[in-house]
Length: 405
Image 1: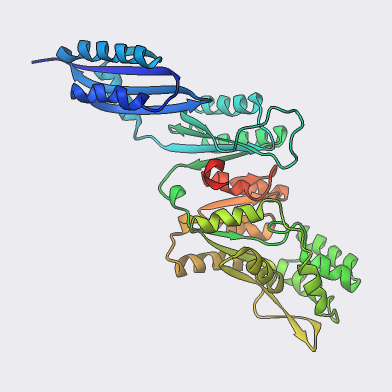
Image 2: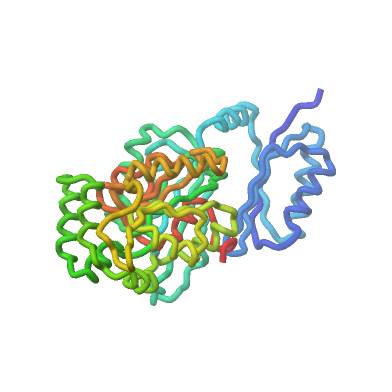
């Protein structure tokens, strides 16, 4: 009976069409069984690995033909015998958890890569692959103001202490000023279908109630109530009611002027174009006002808007609101309701927000992202973006620039 041999071949050299096809054709000719295969291309340099099984009577001929073919193709080939025991150990590791670690910022450096890689090693995880999601960086030192850089690690294993790993990543990201996301690579991560956004200070770079208060001449009073709520002295519903009351008598036309001049957050248009093209359902869940949410819906194509309705009589704000207040608890409820309506598992949902009243929504979603958030929110949410625009969300979902330009 012929002995089974396992051989790993590694090929490197200038990439060109047909290299993989011609090498695997030789394996096919000898009826070799491929057990694993992986390929990467870095700046037109090929790195290809193939682990195959054959019997000892054919291995010599296979390696000879591969050697001649690699010389003809102008690539370097290396042969490494693999023991059955080594292979079985490798197969045993395939059942371990997979994780996706995404790092992004205006610019990533070797230090950033080293710090993240060091923590991966400390947690005894193995890096399976690394890929760049953003376009190629320019060589010029004059960095474009809207530039961004993102790299994604696929790692395997069970972390020694997942909580300690998250804390370490948070500390690194804050001290080095770049963002790190750690997600389990499961079926739900690959099938996200619903994404819900806060509006004020998330989709837009302002708080609309402050804009209205300034027009009504009560800006200082409204901000004082907001600060009191942030200190925990009053809850959101009470603070909302008191602030809206101060808007009494403001002309409805002011809302139109504010809406048409809203400062849109960097990356919103690009993000929405990609999400719509990819078939995502999108929603605005806001403690702000429906008038402005509907303006953004018309402009960018959101599927749902839930916010607070200001009461208007004879073209003037009455200082009251209509219906229930959309607070933190209500946002989480609405996320669940929309998911049910769309027949989407809650694990396939995403929520993005910046404030404390977004925390219930962020905790409920399968993926909660704190965006340019207050310190308390960043510490509570598992994922955060603080260094680039809202289109950074796309990289946490695994989108690559070359697919979404």
